[in-house]
Length: 403
Ligand SMILES: Cc1ncc(COP(=O)(O)O)c(C=O)c1O
Image (cartoon, rainbow, N blue to C red):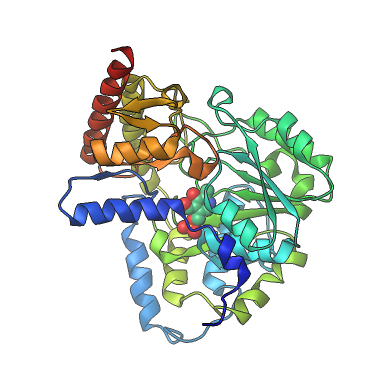
């Protein structure tokens, strides 16, 4: 058999998808698993989204080839959405992409040469690493402990940047930790970036509407507008609007780079389906008041999860964004449960799945050993059931250490 590409030997598949598949298979075997592994919002989009999709099927361009940059309706809606958030962009500084993942892939392809470094705080969203490597770059994690609330400090960023650094990747609010950076914290990171004019900045803002407790979204560009000529804003309808299956994202940034992206699209997948684009346009430009209820529900579930973490005796910084909690189970590393050693997050999450029937994601998938991620984007009753099981498991684990 002929060989496949060498690159595929080092390709890292998404660990989260694998855990989700295992949990789904257990459920199919009639095991009552509570699946808190995957970050899929469980709220329904507003009804105008469905109307827009139906109208798109019936329109003249319906299911034909489209341009590679994005449909005018969606580009306009994206432009206006950015404007409402205080960012001013021309249409030639925008591109519609195949979800946030598509945005990252296109940008890494357009910006990275072999050996270029991309720096970002860890815990990080797991796909960054694999995608950077796939595009020839070198992923460079900057470890941020639970003691520093998993947040990157300006000192860490400053110390990490060197002549090989090509991109600083910043995700706020964060997946997997749910942390939201304050205005001062963002400003301090922006100050560091002012010192490095040869480094691009990629701001992954895809959870920016999911912020709680009266906290506000602060952006690097709000602190330092002069970074605009080397900064990219990345957006998606997957999380804020609960539409991950649409596969719609967008990038705003310097025209010099933005005009390259449709060229890559044109030579690969050509365009994103019109149905998805029209639904996304209606959601971007439609009434956002449904988000109030969405956020209230998330806060109530976040509180259930945080109470449970306390009852489990785990260190867990309070998240005020996205829909994840990220406990640090470091105290249990090196212990065992009924004879099974717990040396890392993989061991722990395997036990949680097999013994407590709760699917969570090991922190190692996000560059944080001994931690694990819980997604609370599921019905409240299901979350409560999962939390009760975790509390029971950790009580038993704790007692077995004392005995
Ligand atoms: C931080 C972050 N960025 C990007 C993405 C990609 O989202 P999508 O491709 O669904 O838009 C995700 C999805 O989980 C994410 O959590």
